[in-house]
Image (cartoon, rainbow, N blue to C red; front, side):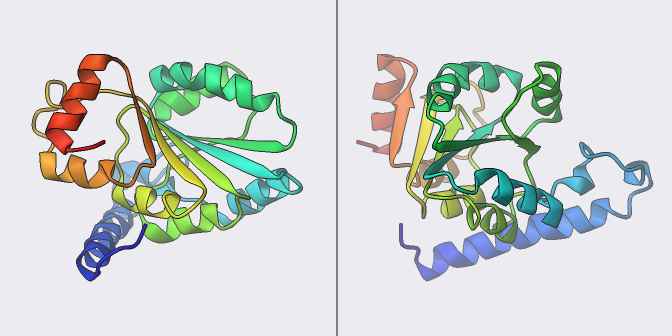
Amino acid sequence: MSFSFFENFFLFLWSFFFSFFRLILLFLPRFTYKSKLQPQNRVFSQKDIKEIQEKSFGKKRSFCFLLSSAGEYEQALPVISFLSQDKEVFIILIFVSPSGYRYAQKRNESLPYYLSPFDILREWKSLYEVLPLCKTIVVRYELWPCFLSIASQKEGLYLLNASSLEKEIPWFPKVFRSYCYRFFDYIFLVDERSKKDFILTYNLK
């Protein structure tokens, strides 16, 4: 997917905002204690990237799942289980919510999983640079422009179990949603009604 100057400028500003926001969090007293799940630690460290690179070494292709929390994780499990049968496939799970991360811990998830970094371009670039022939699957609602822009430049970007946000999150700007949805190669809706809503609301085919 090619980007215009204005799109690139928007992504730069968006990325800069989250970089600045994360920097502020580093100086807030209530976030000074160290924990992988604390906001200031939403980053792919060099250790994380090296670990991902080592685990994916020798695999012919990979799948990255972006999951909000436990519910989206459960929805994705049938697909994850199916893909896991192929020994030449590397699968990585990224959780936006700490509760989803903790849920994976409780289930003793054997696949590598991480807490999502802030939506910063360099963070996602560092991840996708080490993932071989990566397809990305987003479950439900996670619409992060920088993430989507990087993921869309790889082997495929899919939205799973999508439904209209109009009723569930009415304050979420339609123009922003429309912009984000256009990054996806395929969008799989939960039902026929949602399909009609998407076509009418976002002019998607």
